[in-house]
Image (tube, rainbow, N blue to C red; front, side, top):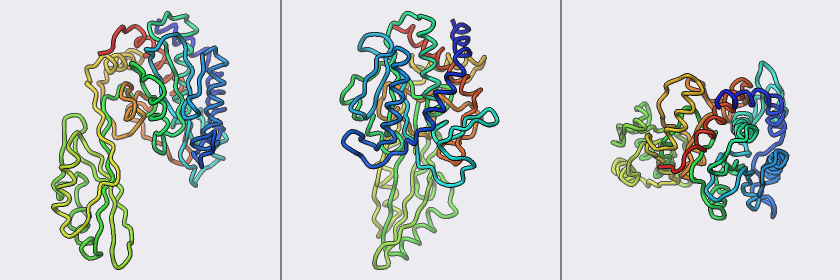
Length: 369
């Protein structure tokens, strides 16, 4: 069956490229909400286009109040999901060509969203179409879900799950291969106070220090994620000779309240605030979902990789029955959010084949444990 699915993907290559380019050409940066577009006209336009693609291929479609939308093949409530996003980050400067031109050069599709996340999402869509083309008998319906607010809060996913039943299993093609069984925690810390005391704190504990927070006593680590990482230090000028510094923590499985207490113990006469926090997501690496996805990757690539974790953040933080899975391959450097974003066409096809085979294997499972 693997070879049959792969052949279908090869036959659909030109159509897949065209569909990716058509989506990349839509400026889907989130903007001001309107009554019918919760995250702006651009994301809604991309969503409507994606749903028309699903309808073209004979999938049942539904818009969940324009927050998310989906195409579904098969009947039933207990569905397997592909969940990705159509919204993109701001364009920024430094582009060699217009960022929404979707031009093809050097066997790459260039443009904002080509890699993050329109290209991989369409690759997964074609993985689903390959199963449909092969008339695979479904144990579970398969639903491809298109999000519109992943980059700026994931409110779309929260809303979707308030209206629709969660999938029994699935993946988001928005990170790296092989199967990802955990995402690091993320927290934003703000320390503020009188300028001299704040600068003394920064010099003592943050400047020219290891990024693991050892001077602060927060250099925790675990077997899944490794050590704490301090990133993105940024000063803020305040009134009346006061100053603040913000920094982010990329943290392993630990108690964030204890981490904050340790920072407060060092930050004498300063105010320490937890501005935002997204806890770790950690699945059992031997679970049915993780092992099935990982096996599909290895069998499709004649490889022997083990499941891994990530520093990134995906819809898997909100929808806990899915995990990150592709599109970047081991050793590739992430270019998402950068000028001149691109996806390699050979990688696009390779992803579609992996996703087709993964969906086939997931469909064979009666119960996910």
